[in-house]
Image (tube, helix red, strand yellow):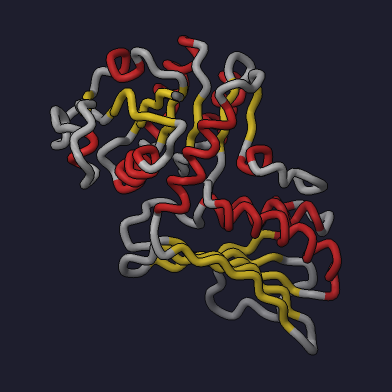
Length: 271
């Protein structure tokens, strides 16, 4: 049995991860970590997630939460995620992180920790979205420069970063597939008299409304046809199940920085 500490245990994703673990025969929750002052502190993690009590108390004591665990799944936040990964590295423990909004500097630090432990880090752990990553790469390579590309994402009105990490990843994949420099071709929304669309630019657009869990569209359009690749989440459970799958996969891996393309053996030309 793989013992998992869940970081961000009281959040929407944390609760879903706890539920996904409860449905998985190979994993069990051994610790539940939350930020200082969180109103869920002291509560049973299973009960707080809407399940039966599992005997694991939500705590802000990182050392106590990690005690006896084999792997950590982190869905906390940019500020606490590095501390969680640092704790894992100090213990030689694998880590899975789905936290988004990290700065380039933060990601660089994660890369340093990955020299000591295996880390799966990805903006989206849904199996379906990661298949979208692979398909978008292939479609972009086949259609080439004859098609304009636009990426549109939609999320709930509480999401604090934009565009989503998933949209950024799609942009990176498509840019690389088309052999374009992402620093030069990305257009984040449009306003005013912008003129004709320059050949080669890639638009990235963010929608924030209601309780949308997550929608991503990669649109390829020419003068005579259009190809749309769409993935829609209607619950967070696919993300949680993907995180648990990643936790099972990473426990016996060598140090390194991995993502779901590795977990799902989808890594090919776009890896």
